[in-house]
Length: 125
Length: 111
Image (cartoon, rainbow over all chains, first blue to last red):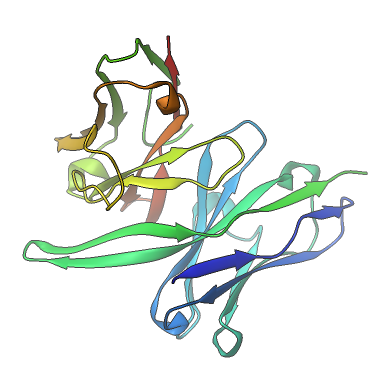
């Protein structure tokens, strides 16, 4: 069974650093892209970026470029989302999710399924 | 403001049919990129409802269906039930942003 298990809730102060994790199991971790998604309190889903653990190829959505760092340790089947200096506006639930690729006669269909349970990050002084 | 526009809220009576729209542009849906739909219950991770415009994963009732035309896509829910009263999001790829984008989300109310 494919599973993505995320690290626990965090409470931090503005200016502090943080690294949360997402550990995959039940599949060949290196071969699937993993994305991170933000959901601020009472708001919608925002796609932050994506990483291919096999070679750590990483892409960021423009609003998140330079604001966070996505990394992966394929030997540990884990991806990470990191902040060097948190802001109150980083308060949100963060989800990791695996990209699926379905090959059809019309071409590949790429979508996201198999979500982590989410990590609540609270930044408050 | 997302590049994929959804109505913030919609409503329908039990048993009725509702359609949630997702309007994009020539750099995403109109460029031929697939649209996927997610359902999110409060305080839980999203659940895949429709992938590749009109395909249902196993376990998703056939009351849910998807379609795409031009720069828009739609999620239709027939035989509305109380348990459908949650949030729905569309997702597609955008070539201008070189990344994926979610719609703003639609909160469905069952009257």
